Each structure stands twice: as structure tokens, then as C-alpha cells.
Image (cartoon, rainbow, N blue to C red; front, top):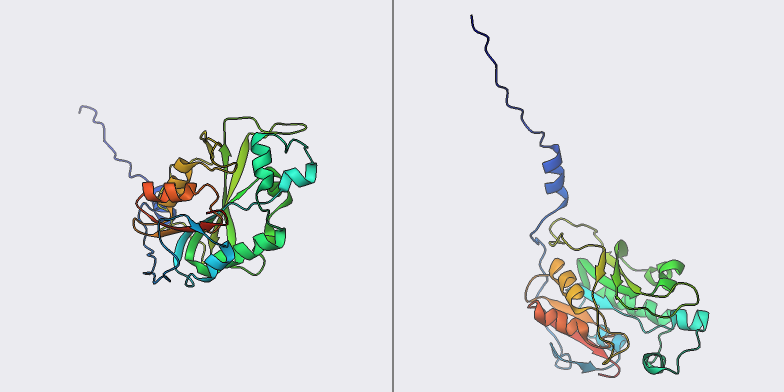
Length: 251
């Protein structure tokens, strides 16, 4: 009797696929409520006003995504590099600085207006990254959920290592969740993007911010920035079919 070979089909284990489906999702299942705004808050414009006043005019628990780039002295004050008389450093030092207590007020104001599971993208330098930002979060519903590093592709100052990067702390208002909220999963945690500092000394990467906006909001949603500086978040929002609300003391 001729030998026969029995073909067996191995059934793949569903564990890995099920785990992926349980954590990741390319669709947002949360939706921001419709906003009723005061006349003074005009969408998609460079508003000239105080950021804390701006935040006080927004409704509670209504915004899916916010950015904050605090105007702190950080490394400049603590390490006294002494090169503020030169071009960009002179312009940066002329900006009105935020004391630590004021930064905490901004974070608390953003926490109030973020919708549940909404995100705050908080820009920090390496000094504040090492020192920690926990005091800014006291009394809020915000939790740190991730960290990104922006490689600017240019050398900055430094007595020892030369600064080439800035960092973006990703915070989420409780309840903390990724599935159904964060829908873009190809953003790396280190991103190289060159940005011109000619218009503003604190200009931030538009493409990166746009990808983050796309990850945590739907088209037509509002994105806020109460200390907009160069208004790069405005450009990023419009390029990704979102509405922008934000301000700066200098407009």
C-alpha cells in the first residue's frame, strides 16, 4: 500500500491579532461636541490677546486637542549662556517670559476645556524634561502618555553637548485610552524636520504638528493654542482641514 502524506493546516493563533485589535484602531469613535463661541474668538485667525483670558472664554470639556509652547527661560536662566545679544537669542530673550506658576495656570486652563480623552501636546526643552513637569499637572486630570523628540537638524547652544532637539510631551485628559482616540500609528517618536527661525525664534515643525493633529481629531474639529507664537499650529490645522483657535500677546 503506497505511503500517503497527510496534509495538515495549522490554524494561526488569534492571540496576536486580537491583541492588536484590542489596542490599536485607525478610526476615532469619540467625537467633539459642537461649539458655541463668543464673537471675540474668531476661528482661523491670529488673535492678539492674553492666553489665560482666551482659555476662560472656551466652554468646558469641548476641545479634542491643544498645543502649548511655554515662553520660559529654562536653559537661558539656569545656565546663563550669555549669548542673548545675538540675532535669534536677542529676539527670544525679548519675549515676555512665563513664570512656572503661570505655566501651571495655562495647563490647568487647557485641562478644563479638553474633552474626555483629549490631548495636550506640551513643548519642553531638555532642562524641563530632566527637571520634570509634574508640578504643572497638579490638580488636573492630565496624564503623561508619550514623549516625542523633534530633531531640528541644526546645532544650538551648550557648554557641553550642543542642543539639536526639543521635546513634545503627550498628555491625555482622563480617561486615558488609545483605541478609538489615536488613529494614526506610523508617527515615530524621533522626527527630523528643519524649520526656519526667521519669522519667530520659537517656530515649531508644521508637518509634525499636523500629523499629531490628524492622529487625535477629526476633520472640522477645533485645535487650540493659547500661546501661539509663530502660529505654526494655525498652519498645521488648516493644512489638515481642522479649525484653529488661538492667540498670542503679540498677535
